[in-house]
Image 1: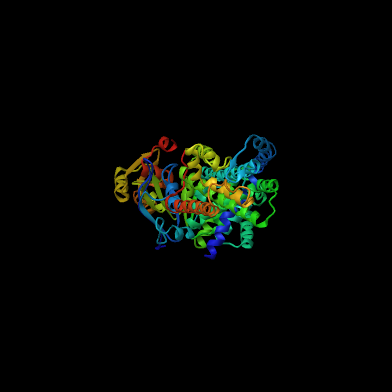
Image 2 (image 1 turned 90 degrees about the vertical axis):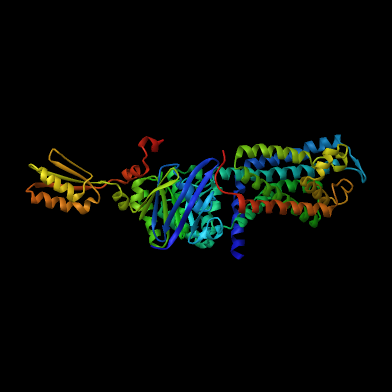
Length: 317
Length: 266
């Protein structure tokens, strides 16, 4: 996973006076599933559309497998494919015709196009809608048509912008599974999402972008571990815990905070899963009877709020 | 090169496959054209009498070809609205992301748009040919070629303007003004010799490519009929029309390759 698929350097994108992305530096590695996490308007889509050569950088550059989006756009486009956030079709388009046209543009022969389009449409439950007008399709079905383009194309770098927005739970899981299949078959994947569950579920690494700036980068578990005292070791005990025992736990676990109330000890630590055994050992040495133990790690939502400093109202707005 | 041609054809098909979209619009256009040929053409030609170096002008024939050129121009200008709609729906973003060279995309859209516009206009061309009783196959072929060149030129221009403006409203205003000016300040409805009475009008028509397209169609349809009423020598007219087609197509290629990026301007 060491070869760089996408190298983003000092990338700035302005629309008039509005700065959509401000000095982004990021590497996406070959073969990984990279999650781009951020709220609406954070600069995710702008970055993805620039990778896809739809936008041009205002400053800086982006390279896709060594090809610059500004200087070698034709070469970049041969390597990438993008499923847009909003499905792209005219209201009079019919899914089958649109997808066959797409398949042919990305290199299939007419016969192969028809075959692969049928296969993908059947897998996504789209076949019965093949000859309907786009205007007659539900939001979820339109979204599936948009995603189908990438499952047909199977590009070296596949970019999914909010792939499961508007999809029902079953289809969401189907799409995630197909994205993973694509990845196993050799595609590097970038998934932009504002759904932390999706980011965690799919991604090898996650980049948190907020107001046009990258705030944090790492695997979901690394990001969680970056929050000081983010893990909570929760131990329910019977009887009394001495002050001495609490001090030993505090020192050994390097807790950020330690609470004891109603027979429940809560230790706020880093890497809780590694320290839980130590806490138990101390309690047992102090003859404290342990009834239950749990280690809770922060959710990616909490990680997001921690790194962006955003308030819930602000993100909603 | 082979791959570029394959993709070029696919891009052209993008426009051609939408032929069925405007059935109602085309039916309206066709009906209006028939009214022009069967009613207004006859009425106006009874009122207008223009004498030139070659004698008295058959204004009915002159008018019909002018009406056809105006219809072809308007249909080709519609390509701009198609593009504006595609920009608003994000379809241009989609096309810009596809593995297609920008110049192939621009050329395909200009040629596809021109071919689609020309195809839309073929019922009107057929009526014109029938009304003028043109039977010479070379004349028919030449009329087709000139119509196609005009359609490609205007479509290319409309595509370029739509891509620059990125807004249906702004395009609406500009296209309305262009349509009014380019049609009126041309030899579509009056021959250059009659327009000479107002020098500004005359010189505007002399530099207007629509004048050359209309008069070239007149020349190839009835070579003898309109001599003395044409805006320029046929060879010059043809060169200018071909030049207009090439310039507008190259302009859209350059724009798309160097300047254009996605997004929609409200």
